[in-house]
Image (cartoon, rainbow, N blue to C red):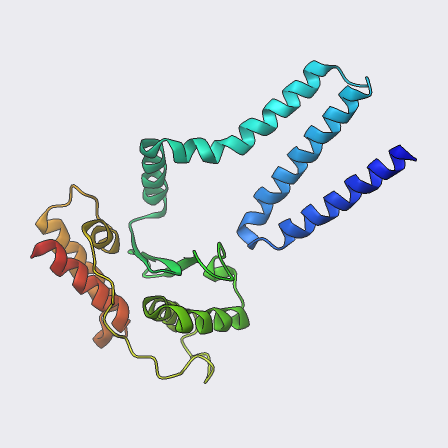
Length: 239
């Protein structure tokens, strides 16, 4: 009977954990399943060691592998220089990108293709990529942005304009107009918007601005809000 109760408890715990993984954003589910499998392996190794069916060294090695796998993201964050190197490496691999952040969204613009991508950093869809979300989910997120943050609303509308060039209907059109940001820009944000590093010269700033504004200027079918942010970044860095 005790063994049956233990097996039932393990089964219930696994069921709950699987449900949690399934509720994760799609791009994080693979990592969630890997962690779940490693955790299950560690628990199995511990049970086998306690029942004498597995040598304690094998159980210890299994536990060590799990700890190392779980600690890797923490180690990367703990060493800022390593984290910055990794981000630069990823940026070089993906091509030059601009980044515009708001309270709810982290948006990136690929310089070569002009394609927008984004991630939700706050709210009910936290950690979801915009590309993973359905039309109804995006509309729900838009309603949340409208109630919480103007900059986030304008960023999301910029993404929706590109992803749905034919429009999303009356649900998305509530008369939103691109209004100036209510937050004061800083140097690191301005450099990120233009896709530049701290070593950028004034000539680099002017060239990056010219290249981006050609892609996003409203007169060329671009986006008012992002064009305004690019102009604001250039003015901040050159004034």
